Length: 548
Picture (cartoon, rainbow, N blue to C red):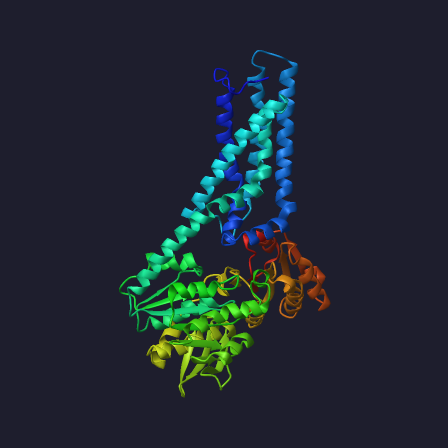
């Protein structure tokens, strides 16, 4: 039997070296698990849902990695015990080559898988990864020690079992750091709050809704820039730390307006953001079933979005979407200063008429304050017209004229991956709507695609997700809608394949024109084999990485 604590034998030091090397390897192998935790905003509920839904794909790979590595290492141990030599214990370490070989194969597959949002090594993730590394070192060393005490055949081979702990090590590292992270977050949030309070004349605007928030935010910033210096949260920075980061790094004394996009996945999160920003202007856009899986019910979604209106009720001004039932309900119950917006309802505070949608944008007449003005925007679709109109009441409250608003509207640029029109070679048009998708948004995207007469229409989509119990029905109806708009369909990923396909078939869609691709990369390869001149391709949604 090997005495690992006989420092002169060298096995003790080899065990330490192996523990550190294995911990480094596990950190690389744990990439996907840490990425999913980060994608879910460090909420473990979403992580465990992903683990449950993809256990066959990832856990089976890990089990195979462990079994093959363990078998190879044990066989090597046995061979060198049979052919006993003075160096048999040291030569048996060659069995580690099996472990590193199979680990390399596992990592190759994982890192070559396309990622929509790669893991970001933020300060918080770096701290969690450090804890992950320390835990891996300790557990690897302990496993080597324990296995060596009971059987010489296994000995260090036990480290091949460590990848089985990856699904546990990732959330455990997060839980260990959670109290510290809360303290760190509170400290930064207090700094952001103090900085906002140091600008007493700063105009603060909050924007919420189930979808369209980023488009409204960008449109409003563009319009208000005709008169004010504007700071807005970038991209989809709509969480407490996202807003805090923007305030601390981007907001300066020269800014007159701060616009904060406010997202949520559960009750109380909009109120939490309002406590940081303290907005006096609010915009409640379209409210739908987005994130129904995490909210639990549509009533919870509506109640959470209403938190912004409730916050600005006493001394502020709030805008609502009259064309959306849930937003309109909040408007009716709101007792503060308010306005409602509609695309064509003349009873609304702001509405549009003479709407002309083309392949290059939208022309319309804007009506507000019993006045009207002709406007043009590069954005496609009536839903984007609605998003633009949502900005007008706030702009008017802040003293902009209709002429200034019209100029601002003409300068609004399409948001990347949100129904973005791309002209490809050979007279091929791409409608990139891959950022995310909703029930209403998918209908609008199909309507825009229909406008392109004379083109063969191809839809590439994984369907709609995060809709909880409504997901299957929503994707079945999505399939029906596609059947009425497209000539060819590529369904990406198996998540919603059956529901979409059934909707297509029930609408008598040609089954020969229904194709399947395992992932986005495979869909792109498939497209190359069928694409022709005068094709328009709608990429509708792209699954987040917790569906891959």
